[in-house]
Image (cartoon, rainbow, N blue to C red; front, side, top):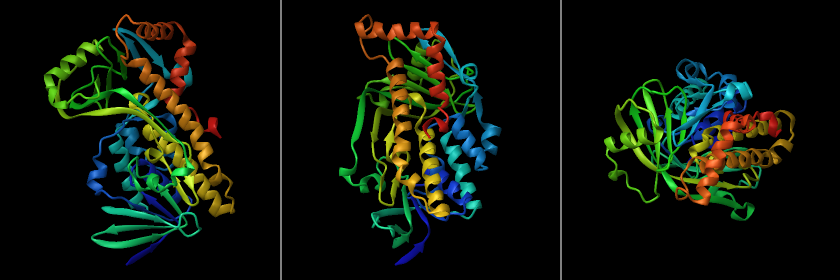
Length: 392
């Protein structure tokens, strides 16, 4: 059986695991990443596309932001519309910060290249099967690679392997409480080769359902429609999708070729403990937020920033205080992000019949949003991401 020795074993080569590895390498701490998918699959897995101000600063500090700055689209605001009446949320005015549109798959390509250039070992197509002895000072990860069994001995294990990964399955069930909401609607999402006819994201409430106009570049659009949870993608032709998007958004779109479409359920999920012994969870392994707030990747980066600081303090100063407080620091931000994502989801989606008490209350929120700069600032500062220092 092949045996590997390192300081930190990381399961999962998504944004969380890759960013953690680069943070640790910068501090002279060795790590190995185990990823069950191929490099090609990971680099082409389409996910989020909006980076908070904080996240961009992290990538700048790690020296992986060159292509991001060349190809990313900086946005200083967004639009929130209610049945065709639109209010712009001015990020720059209210926060002096901005967001950057840059696809997660592009982030992952940049991070993988940086890891390999800096001699960080990533073992692709390797399935982690068991996390051993994580309540001791000598944990290990059993995995299979190329049809052979292997083991990675390490001082710490980081589970950055997503909602269905081994990390969360291994965390003792009695060590955490679970919180979740299953929303009564889903998103029908498309990627299309089309030039955006809008300069910033549009969140649109419509009496027939929510729509979102986003983008991935100046040539690729990402758009969504609210649909019932039991909706089938086969029921929607490309022509129907474009027609309904224009109807709900109230703008004319460049109806280019749709090259990807699917339906995604909306949910909120989290656990209130992210650690046990020498095992630490980060990112989707510990929490899921609905995409309305564009927070998933950004929250994962905030997690691993806390974890990297704790591990660094352990090795450099023999101090375990930051590691012991890892959950507390992460969860305070997670709850803030859960609240904002939930708020945006309920604000923008059709949930009740038109003319009902609930729907008219929802309309009153939009009316208040248009008249209140304080309300606009609340949305702006949460959307661009509260500074890391706010939770330290």
